[in-house]
Image (cartoon, rainbow, N blue to C red):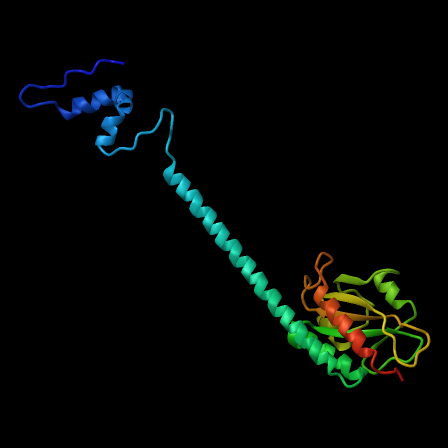
Length: 232
């Protein structure tokens, strides 16, 4: 270690510029004197230690802000899911109050538009056999043609030739199709192929990667409710 210089400058005492210049030239001398650092209120660190207090605080603040944004997004999604579930339950109760098959189709379309903001909803039923007023008649094999032989649902863009939404078809941009197999009283042939169709006015309203639990639930309610009445 270099010897400390004699900084006395006669009666006037040491001059600060000289002390400052010497400390700049010999910084380790001060760093090694831990007791002096503590006396003058400085926090000593080990050698080769760089304190990033401000940078660390900035990172923590950024992380906290990201967490707050993520929490807000999660809360918004949770509120939207809760609202959708509530509307689904209310719609189910309304459907179960239907008085006949035609009233069921009318209530389904009204619930789709009024409660879920959709463009239309419809019930399709395969022939042969009677088709209730307000339902859409499908040719034999029509459900398999739309969903596949073993398909239960299909979500995606609206396409020409679907023919399920009547006058409301012009506003439909994407659709959800749910297979049904109602068993009507008095029919010995067993379940009749049918489907429940929902049309959204938005192109991304229904997509292949989207979950369809809520519309599938509504379709099951429609299916079970429709089984109350014989098809005349």
